[in-house]
Picture 1 (spheres, rainbow, N blue to C red):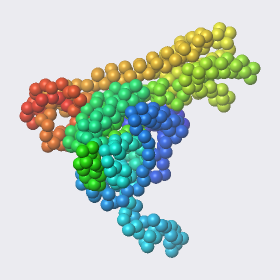
Picture 2: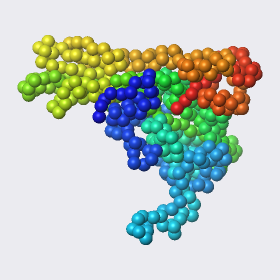
Picture 3: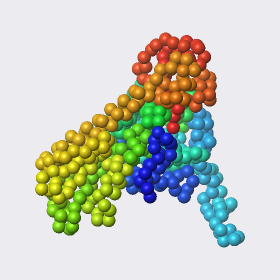
Picture 4: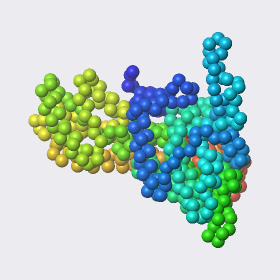
Length: 490
């Protein structure tokens, strides 16, 4: 397969789709709308998982697992929740197959389930039904549980990582004695997601609150982090929901307070998914392939020997062995690619495509001079360094790359963030130079819906601690107290 990619400027969508496949991250499966995450792609997801899992545990959360199947009746208990997910649900109606008349396999009509089961689109209902048995008193609270799982939301138009029928995610579900505790939890987890996006993924994000129209089904408030991709489209990179007492009331989950009074429990839920893979690819990558932040790269350094004959390779390998050991002692992940099945030039192109942050080449002349050639993937710059103390130099270089990717993404976002004061100006910006558009909105769902229908732009969020500024709504001309963030989105 050719490593040449479509150009981002010419066809961003095609560039993205090709990159996911050619960089060996994922591929379409035989199951319509579903994907196979390949080992290289899964290694990045595992890095994300490990970092997030530690952050969850550091904030007092524990992991558990709940069933994939949810009785249909559970969904009908919370009206807005079922309305929000009804059109996306996969439903299990039978539990057995049999041989048909022509030898084909058919559904056994006699094996109909008494109650249909929904394949998990999200787990609030099954978890709150379970919490009813776990919570009797204030002594049982808070419950701070996270689940790593897969979910199914039936999608008509799919795109690898960004929107697939089945995807991987984590979902936190917590229970609290007071509204204040639950809101504090919701905000804390939003901050965890923002820190992960910025410190690990090198993606700057805006923290904000969703409008009632864009809220999670069944939530009183949805907090989110919004990121901007290179093509000027927004991507919701994580959400944290204050669910109030809606699910506690739906599943009759009460607790006895210290005063002996019975009250409904307060709830939150929060999650990120393999969509983050899409965000990572679209924020940093270029026409040569992936560009990975060092903290999430499956391996941070690749060493390629350039040699003639077995004897030279043996001499180079002896030096590389010591360098590799010294780097690994500093926690740097290193791959030594001494395969003789591919030439060095092919390997260089391959690791550029796969976004390996640092490439080290070492040949016979380097052995004589005690040097190596170091190439960084983010800037494509090369330099010759002494082998002495190479591990410390590479350690600092990886930190520089991590920071540079963040600063580059931040500069890109700033360059693609605009203010619009009229509806004409708003539409013109969206068409000519897409990005985040800061504009006044009158606060009504009707205006929000009209703008969405006419321009395909949605209110991504009302930023937290948003600057209050008197103005007039770009659509209705009614008074407004603040600008909100509009964009077209994935």
